[in-house]
Amino acid sequence: MSKLSIRAVSKVFRAGTTAVDSVSLDVADGELVCLLGPSGSGKSTLLRMVGGFEQPSSGTIAIDDQDVTRLPPEQRPTGMVFQSHALWSHMNVFNNLAFGLKLRKRPAAEIRDRVEGVLELVGLKGYDRRMTNELSGGQQQRVALARSLILEPKILLLDEPFASLDQHLRERLREEVRDIQLRLKITTLFVTHGQDEALSMADRIVVMQNGRTEQADRPEIIYRDPQTPFVAGFIGTMNFVEGKVENGRFVHPDLSVDMPVSDGPVTLAVRPEALDLVSTEDGAAVVHRVTDFGTHGLVDLHLSDGTRLKSLVRSPEPFSSGHAVDLRPRAFAAFRDNVKLYRSSDAA
Ligand SMILES: Nc1ncnc2c1ncn2[C@@H]1O[C@H](COP(=O)(O)OP(=O)(O)OP(=O)(O)O)[C@@H](O)[C@H]1O
Image (cartoon, rainbow, N blue to C red; front, side):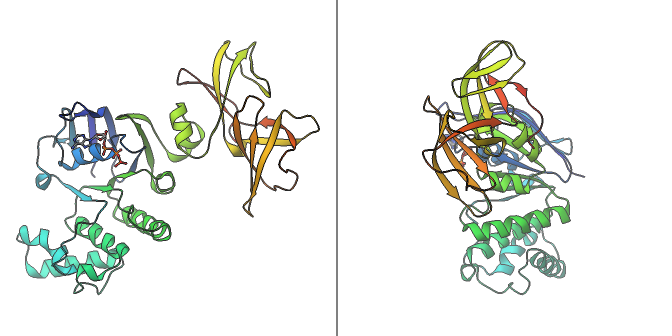
């Protein structure tokens, strides 16, 4: 049972940059939490503070109720895998993996068994005598993961571990790592700026911006019920339409929907898959481009005020560029001053 508790942690660098701004986060036993956000949002700094590679300016970090805030990395029950694998190239795989155990003066037989076990776990059985520079990028990252896991950390920390790999390999490794994590039931904090990675791997996603957490929720909630326009726009594709509410209706020259909130300006957010199109003679929106992906079509639209929208349609056939269409949003959110006001029934 290992849990991580981050309480009001901030990091101000000497230059005056607030990289992490009073973040609190609990990661439950066996949970995999992804920190997701744009470049510079503070994800790596937060992760590095959990690993002990960076000191918080304020706040506390506890693992299983033990305060580790001031402990150096080697005294924390954490294992970190970095973006660039940082393996020792002058050592073979066995020695890379055995290194930490030798430091801890474990008996040779135990070291052999544990190296063998962890290599099997990451799918590299029999690779122990290879030099690490004779391995592919994906294999090197597997060794880096094995090197962390062999010390049986309570908390596994992964900092964009697949960033240097090609798309195909990245997808495979993310499945493998998730399988291993579930098998070991190891509490994991994972930094990525890839939303697909976060959506496919995480039990919970923490969306970060400017050193703060914008929202922490299960992936499907982050996607379906984003609490701020930033989260709405960062995960998946989102259309935004600026307008205002008058007498319980969102009003825009080309689009109007019921919205039982008080009058005033709002931003309407609607997913491409929740924006139905109907071809008409005198529709308000004009089709700009149609892309046929085989399984579905994506229609780019222009509204009369210049707003651009995307709609996902099952078949692109009825639509072609220059044609007018009517818009029928099925599910949407409205934001006013970054606060979500209202959402219709769940996306169909
Ligand atoms: N050692 C440092 N000294 C000064 N500023 C730093 C240092 N490390 C990070 N920063 C700044 O802190 C902010 C957060 O950086 P951080 O690396 O945590 O972001 P990130 O979300 O992990 O970004 P990326 O996805 O690009 O890795 C940035 O503005 C960055 O320039």
